[in-house]
Length: 206
Image (cartoon, rainbow, N blue to C red):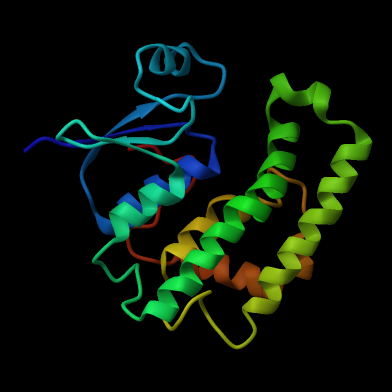
């Protein structure tokens, strides 16, 4: 049977989210690594494998192509326990996924990129890093408060919201330089995510 093919950037939290869900679901797929600054990434863009010039990109066996990490999560999670059946719970899940891309990723991921990618080091001015640190701590506090009295962000079991938020939060300390000691609920939630059957780390490639 034909496989799905995932073009993903190994170091990217957006790409990791998709690899993580696929692993948690036990789904078989082909992985094409396209790391930042490599020839593989350049070739994937030049040959039309990444129509929007972004990763991850999921190629379905019938030739259809799906862009945007959270859209891919929705496609893979539809009809499974990763998506609540109740319409309001679904909307709550989507609100966290929108929050992740609109507010979380644009701060937490950007600070990590400035610190980790040599090509972006010239953009890592003390002023910008300080602003991203301050803004990121506000975002992490919102997540910390949302976890009061609950194990997951939506309902009694993990959903796509947890996958989306986990992608960059799990390395906010090691890659982004955020002090996570002030966010114990997030730390416990991250450990809970890591205990799920089929879990893989960011550096695990299929």
